[in-house]
Length: 393
Length: 106
Figure 1 (cartoon, each protein chain N blue to C red):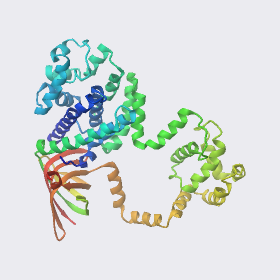
Figure 2 (figure 1 turned 60 degrees about the vertical axis):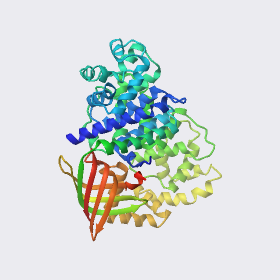
Figure 3 (figure 1 turned 135 degrees about the horizontal axis):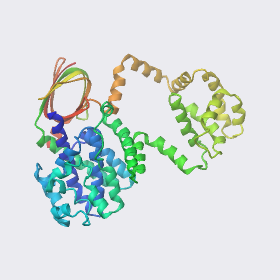
Figure 4 (figure 1 turned 90 degrees about the horizontal axis):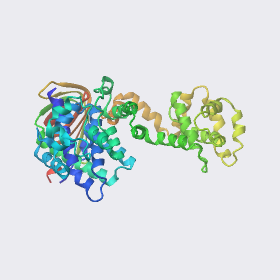
């Protein structure tokens, strides 16, 4: 347990340090202001907690908030928050009289300054945004902060979170969080939720949302994007791989007549299935004049051939791009490690980030000395000052 | 001061990047400022690792892949064991990415 807690405190120190040092940029020179900075810090810390890299609210108030109070704070952390405090009120006064028009920054130093226990007792449910927000009814930025801040009664990272790498976790957890927060009636949540979701697969979702929100968008380019998006979803549900180019062309054609129907989400799957099974569609498709020759010529063969097994159909389509894809696939089959490697790269699972001092090799024995590293191993973050590695190749 | 962007791939770095990403998408934050924050993170993280972390780790394992490109070593280990003060951690497969420490001191 020692290692994670150290990691947690170092992380919190880094967060505090970064926030402190960019404060000037936020406040001066027409920056977005201190509130945005606090929002940034809140969201950052929340994500860290959700990722399990930073221990719960207690640690947060003890470390991140304590620096201003000076409990276990590194020197340079002590200074800046204090300045922020002095600009407005003395910490004690703020603490005793919450209704005083407070800027958001003020409550920050308080917990540490007065007594962090005060904040720990209510399990953080009276987390600092509460006094300033409720008492003063500050600008809308505060709601955002509230939303961004770790929800005090947020359950500790559950096992399923730990099973996943940080990135994947965050997307999902954030989504869950959003729903929980939504129960609390936080107005900002839907907005945030979108972005959380977006970070996973931004483009596709954005498109879909655009079309859904905007209702019918006149299509001038004939690409039938909306239909295509939906058909992709359809494919997902039917566990089809991504559509190959030929499919796109076909979809574009089917989509054209459809695109005149305002309904973007409901009916699309049916025409798609129809298209796969019913030859009549080609007659229908013929109505669209200019692209008819281009796409429909290969389409019928392709479709009829592909109908029995859709998965095969798509594979064939991919193979047609080049001769390479099947070769690569075989390679992957031979060497599963490559797949795993890619997966890990995406998921940043079991990753060591460090600087090397020296790397040597004698025959098949490799030795390396690393320093200043961050390891993410078995869902734990471990920091090291020095590391020596001995590998055999 | 030179910094590595290396640590942005860590948990803390990814969390920050995501946060900034959201805030930029929100329009709350300008991209320029977001980058400044990231650069500051590079500095702070490097500094914190130098000054606040004292632990030592030994790594053993079978080297599956090695690569040295643009002054960055990448090792992929199989059956790796990480030993620090606490307890050894066994990992079936781990990737090590290491930048040249000399680049920082230049």
